[in-house]
Length: 261
Ligand SMILES: Nc1ncnc2c1ncn2[C@@H]1O[C@H](COP(=O)(O)OP(=O)(O)OP(=O)(O)O)[C@@H](O)[C@H]1O
Ligand SMILES: [Mg+2]
Image (cartoon, rainbow, N blue to C red; front, side, top):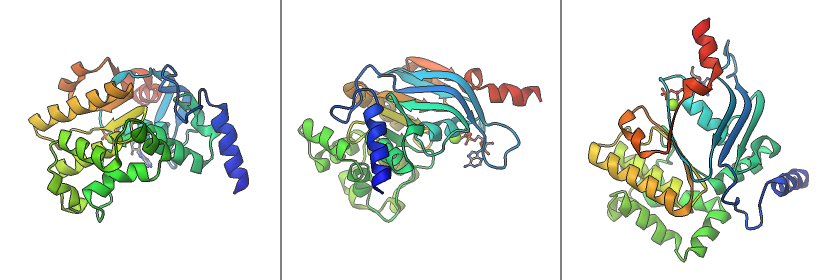
């Protein structure tokens, strides 16, 4: 165990700017180079990306047809899967240089994920689902303390911003509507101010008014703390709110190769 911890510490020291456990502002939020991902048993690569960068604080709208690899790309950025070749760096930290446990910790501290299928724990209350993100991350707790906010205050502030009634916060996630669960998932991603927020189809279950409120909150929270935002959606109407639109097909050579075959 000590070996793993030592390796994680050494890797952490190798990362640019670790003084307060936080990445410096100007390090790129994401850098992918020479990346290749093939899922086990698949006949062809899912992703082949030579170079992709997401700047610190940059907001990018990522789009592409269903099955083109958007969620797979986000899993790589989250360090949930590892590529066959190439490098994924988040806030200057090369994920492959970390042990699996250190990768999990790094993600908990620095990346807020809104998953396509939410990944809430159904038996936990909405409030406890939101707070879960901080329970596993002393760094997120420290950021909130530095901002002069308690965990409970911040959970309620984000819930209110997302139009989630305070009464709903005590209900088990399984008893919430799909749109309510999606908003709980967003509050969980944002709490504790991660430097990178990754959102996979986060507005698909929301009505038009809530969609706008949700996007406003996501953009505002990211702007307030200088967080980068990588936002996947099929809804092209939302693209105008972002600094840049990226078509996965334009950066993923695997799709071009599949088209040629
Ligand atoms: N865990 C996995 N194991 C094996 N294959 C997978 C896995 N996840 C995704 N794939 C495959 O990778 C390809 C891309 O899937 P992915 O979920 O990344 O697409 P997507 O662009 O997010 O699609 P959608 O818009 O429908 O969410 C698909 O062919 C899919 O079958
Ligand atoms: Mg997907």
